[in-house]
Length: 279
Image 1 (cartoon, helix red, strand yellow):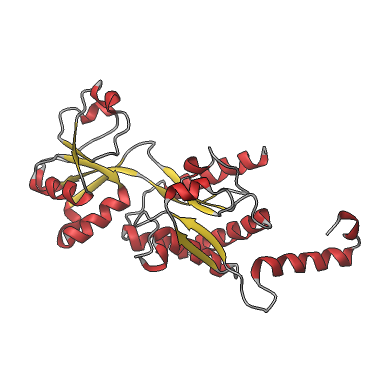
Image 2 (cartoon, one colour):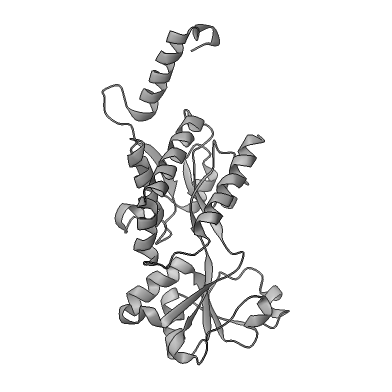
């Protein structure tokens, strides 16, 4: 439609109705699904978990409030990064270096955490700086430590394992003092391995380790900006009506959501709003 064709208040109303129809329905009256690509990364995104995991539940709850059907398609991370026509989900830093997106909407967070097994210790572990880890036997999954020299210079050493299950078994046996992994991955592993001992494991979120998990409509996707506004509205609604917190508690447990979750989510949302406003 040309600019000259858009004239008059009545035409603008019709245009608005047409836009809503394009986003929400097809010519035969059935809903048109908005597709987002995700990489298998349980419990955040997984085809083996209800609604696609924690973030999938949040996204579907948002969509319900704005009368949109959203479909999550699981694809390899490289394919998601390489294809600039896909709507994608995940950590924005993996994607924004390669492509521009219509919008970046943080919907959840990912924390790294230190876990320990309370019965093996006479006192809780205090961790406020890297030097506090010196002298502990610390487990980490193989391949996740990027810069070993940084920790070596601080006198902090690690023992690598091939799986989270191995890390937590060693932790319980006392072969490790601590292990580091993504907090929700750790909680899920503990629930699977030691369901009767969940309370015996403690997690300390690592300062400044938090990263956002976002949905990113492709810049080339039809009406990407308008679509982003709808999803932001859906996120606001489920946050205000308690649905969002209920989903978090399903995965974290009651009263175990990180205390700075909502302030960090707002901080990242504001950060990406500012970036998009400057484009």
